[in-house]
Amino acid sequence: MFARSLLFACLFFTAGAPHAAETQVAVAANFAEPIKAIAAVLEKTTGHKLRITVGATGRLYAQIRNGAPFDVLLAADTKTPAQLEADGLAQPGSRFTYASGKLVLWSADAAKVDAQGAVLKTGGFRKLAIANPRTAPYGAAAVEVIDKLGLAATLSPKLVQGESIGQAYNFAHTGNAEVAFVAMSQVLGAGRLKSGSMWVVPQSLYAPIRQDAVLLKTGAHNEAALALMKLLQSAHIKDLVRSHGYDI
Image (cartoon, rainbow, N blue to C red; front, side, top):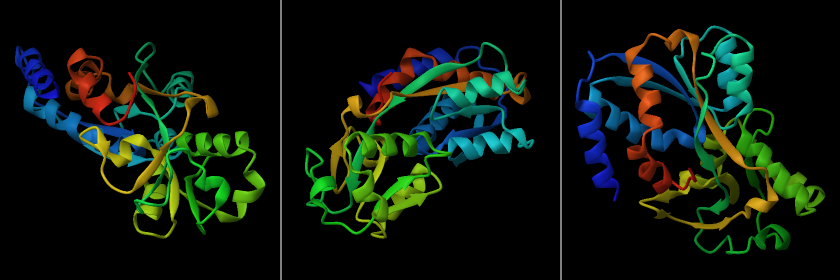
């Protein structure tokens, strides 16, 4: 299915492709893998190249406010792109939701996390990694889940915070934390769990993680930035995004 969609994308975007350009894109850490694949599609179909900076949405926002020369932001929430519009730093009307994320509890140990997430109540781990809830929407979602399960007091001494969801994943991947709340996209490959064990957190336990893209004022006339925004909204790229564990 994805191969066929990629072929359609190639045919669609190659026709009349403009002169190749380059754009700097700020990308929420949960979307680090999908954006690599999207960059490859963009370059193959248009010749345009992406220079990608990955980080926590809150920190990327701070960098943009401080003059970082990004042309596009792919955030992990809707609030940050809206705020950039209000700040006068984004093109009005350019925002759209490119994905809806899913939170999972994951361990590199294939026997650690059960399918119901009971490990959170029964213990059996020393450290639980989450992203910083002040700067990373997935971290805020993890805190919301812990609170709704009534486990804040129990789990608080075990929490270790990563600057981004990428760092939270690395804590669990390297064994510095036995379990971590991460994005489903970080642990899936070809639509299936790459390794370890996970609990897919019911979406009733946290607010929807809608992720918006926005064109920044610095990218308003950048052909590569405009082509990326167009590609993200095309039907041809949605199978790729879904295969990484997102809803559209």
